[in-house]
Length: 113
Length: 224
Ligand SMILES: Nc1nc2c(ncn2[C@@H]2O[C@H](COP(=O)(O)OP(=O)(O)OP(=O)(O)O)[C@@H](O)[C@H]2O)c(=O)[nH]1
Ligand SMILES: [Mg+2]
Ligand SMILES: [Zn+2]
Image (cartoon, rainbow over all chains, first blue to last red; front, side, top):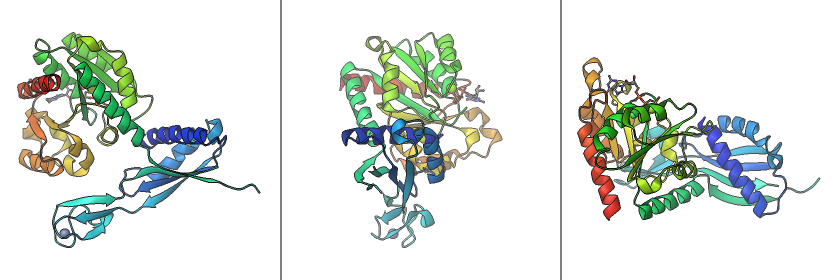
């Protein structure tokens, strides 16, 4: 359900960008999807197929997902580490005072026309 | 073969919504209307809590409710019957959350000149509503005892954006292994400033604290 909602936002933004660039048909949309964004790329592409084919401008248009690895930085020891493996607790010093650096993206990177 | 041209976009899909939400908040400020976004899992007691709370505050401030659901209008009818205040039903068209644009459309159908507080009962779900700013002044959520005290660990975003966490169904505490102290600890890990209010919406126990907090919030919003 979540992915379908997101697809509607992508369609809206892509159509807007296409109009601004005088494009009549979009061949592909490339997304940046963070590892911890809560978006499941497979569901997203399934929902995309269903919804995009209902739009003249997007019929047959592919959606591709770049996965952005999630990284966290620790404020106690300033080390960085991969979020998915270690979560919120710093594997270097055990501190909970950590902040996600990247990996939360749900972003339209580019369109191919 | 014709050439493929790449147009760089680099835009978060939340960007437009965040802007719409900020605009809506500014407009609410001008009108002196306070919007509360209430979220929770399905069945944790949003509608029951609203009825109890509204019946305590409706003599002191003017309240209206917007019920957001994927379909149906049982909650809007229930609120209207039990409290007599204006209540409308919004349908999300299959979406798992409400965004700022949908919230604005709902508010357009509200008597905005005659209300101080609008409460939005968001779609029952701990994931998606947390990602979309509705334009509300504050976010509140209800966690009910049967759901377990570990929810702040499993749904970190939801707990980090909520200013108030209501813990409902405390009447059933004896039957569950819900640990109130641990729950408070976990909530504060996500948001050190979150206010925690334990209640029983069935009997009304604890609801005064929620009502008083709301009245104070609304008065501050109107006067500052
Ligand atoms: N034991 C107990 N049951 C409660 C309490 N509050 C609500 N309930 C019951 O929990 C069920 C769900 O309550 P609702 O108020 O409809 O919950 P909701 O969050 O609005 O549900 P949805 O809108 O469907 O997501 C109902 O059967 C209520 O009677 C409480 O404090 N104690
Ligand atoms: Mg309800
Ligand atoms: Zn560290």
